Amino acid sequence: MTRRRQSAKTPAAGRRSQRGNQGGVALLISVTTIAIMSIVLLEFSSSARTHLTSGLNQRDELRASTLADTALVMTRACLDSKAWGPMASMQAKMDLEQLCTMMLNIFMKERVDLPMGGLSLEVQGIEGIGMSLGEPSIDLQSEQSFIGLAGLHCPGRGSVNVNCSSRKNTASILMQEFCTENLAHIFEEEQADGHKYTREELIGNLVDWIDADDNRISYDPVSNTFVEGSGEGEDSYYRNVDDSDGYRSKDAPFDSIEELRLIRGMTDELFNHLKDKVSVHASGKYDVNGISEDVLTALMRAESPAFKLLEGAGGSCGRESETVKEREQLLRLFVRMILEARDLRNMQAGLSKAYRGASGVSQFIQMAADPLSVKLQMMESIAANIGGSEFTMEQLMQTLGINLALYDELKMTFGPLAGGLKDSLTTDSNLLRLRATGAVGNIERQIFAVLKRDGGTVRTLYYREE
Image (cartoon, rainbow, N blue to C red; front, top):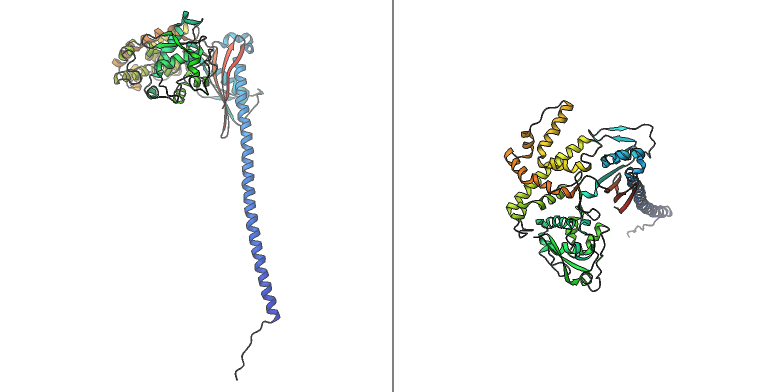
């Protein structure tokens, strides 16, 4: 008879198995706890970094805002003639952007940036605010370097003076802007209100917005004249935009660029095209020391009989022929020559204004008649002072890709046009456009303002933070 062996666990073996199970559970609990703690620590670390970064950004934002605010305050102080005391007469002769930038750096950075050569000198013994972290800067321009929409206003009320010279000149320049080819589709399509606006209607709407009566006005670009209508009034015209959102014509000057959005026919694309080219405060006198290529081109084109002939009484507006496009390119080339000669003279003048006083406009017009010759004279003068090599007219023309025959043609065609702008040009401006910037790390804050020097006071006409 075979004996079967019966296996049985001993008490010691049972205890070992129990301890093994307990050890496994403890290990699982430990691993789980470590995993949970790791997740918590990672989340805490991420949250801490986020809060730290947020705190640093807030600190840098505060510093950048302080820099921009201080740059604005310092610029206002620089423009205040009272602060100059007995030297106030010198202020009118100075290039205010360079002067105010230099004063800003002395006070805030304890540093002098020289107007020529890009050299900087540390200043000892002057206690500014010494903000070594961050970089303040200002961009200061004459507001009268832009197309002045205030020029659309005529003194008086009603039809007595509906065609004043400032209104006609401003309308002519605006028409040149609206005839830009990349804007043509705006005047060929219906807008959101179901109406298709012409360029002439838009110019009339700009005038209606600011004039003091309720009579709508119409503009004829061929004769460059305005006529008051006897039909629908301005207020009813704006109330009919939308029964729920209609509004009245302002019948007062513009207060800000953004107000242009309220003009019927003013699309976002058209507003973005105009906003950096126009001023709602300037009134049609253009500062030769800061006038831009676009504005000077528009002014000279509006004065050109050749353009009027080629455009066929406005028929090609927005769809210019190749001949008109070629002439536009040549005019822009000539305008760039004028502005390069002006900028070189500004550089020579250092902290002084190159063109100032009553004679400044005449000097600018004389230079505009033959800009390369004037530029050559200045380059020769600079070379003589520093012992450099001589320059020739052929070298200047070579850099521009033109020859003597073409330059003579440009002088004959466009040179006299600047003379027709005499009454539209100035060298003095009491309106200044300021962009004050404070930058710290990746954070940048900007203040945009329009300042007016009114006697011994500097007033802020417009202010915007960005």
